[in-house]
Length: 238
Image 1 (cartoon, rainbow, N blue to C red):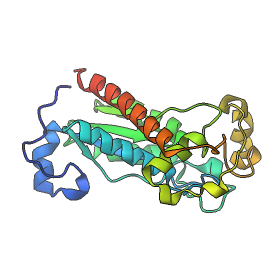
Image 2: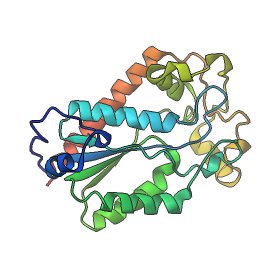
Image 3: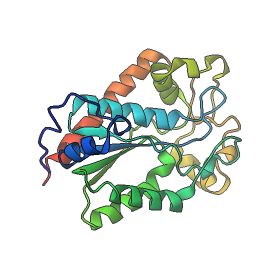
């Protein structure tokens, strides 16, 4: 897929700032970047919106580096049933998320393609199924997610550092405490049957102590570079 410059107009590259005539001019030469997140517990020290905020920040960085990208409003609800033992978690489940993503991407056919940037690991299975179906229909769609250490997969040092870089006022470092630091593969059998509460009373998989904003900026820079590589490779394939 070869893209022409989105527009010579220096106007907004966020769908929230466009009118439909602007979108009509941009869409044929633009890729829509959709941040996919979740509303789920992230330990006693982080807000429910971590996954959504990380995904949104990465989409913004992608758009800042590639003028062919238009950022859509974030999808703040995902498949978070494994966090059901922690009050405040909101989940739409795997089947609903898969259907939502299929219909959402179908509705974006005016754009040259869609990039789904996912900040929540629990969305992976329905996201994969949705992308497989959409590609079979002939639609141009890329799914991408940031990576992290398997022993630090939820509300640990990685996500805490990222939030200290993105929104430090939302982090409560005095409440940060280690959770279960076993590898995710080791925990999966119990996770699948009993959810996160069965393996970590405080909702943390990893150790957030020692997290820093500097480390968070480094992580975000690394994720951005990887996302740009994936995006550039995808857009050059016809």
